[in-house]
Image (cartoon, rainbow, N blue to C red; front, side, top):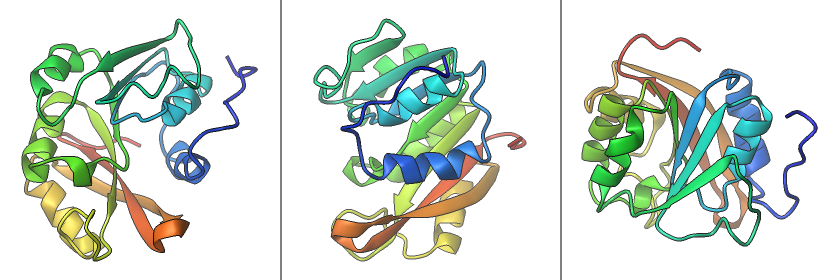
Length: 182
C-alpha cells in the first residue's frame, strides 16, 4: 500500500490537514468514512496510511474525475438531508472525517449528536472567522463547548490549517463519545 501515489491535482490544504491528523491518529487497519469527501483527498491518504476500508460520502460525485479504484466505494448522498442512508452503514466505520463541510449543514448541533452516536472517533474541521461559512462560534473554547454539549464526551484540539484565499484559520478536532484514545 505504501507505494501507491496520491494524485497531484488534489486539495492544496489536504497535505496540511493530513500532517496534523496523521501525527496523532493511527489509520492502520481502520475503516474510514469521509462525510463530505469532495475529491477524496483524505481517503487516499488514509488508505495509503493503512486503512483497510474507506468510503466517501458527498452530495456531488467529484471522485470520478480524479480516480477510479476498487478500494473506494462512493455513496452519492447529501448527509444533511439523508442521514438515514449513511446511518445504515455507520456501524461499519471506526473513524469519521468531516472537513470543510459543517457550514453547509442545516443543524450543526444535531449533526454533532448524530456523529457522536454513530462513530467511535470523529475528526472535525471548523472555521470560526466572521464570514458567511462559519459554524457559529468565534474561538476554540466555544467550539469545545459546542462539541461537548452535543454528544462528545471527549474533544481534543489537534491543530489548525490556514485557508489562504479566505485569510482564515480552521481548527481540527478529534472527538469521541467515549474515552478518546489517540
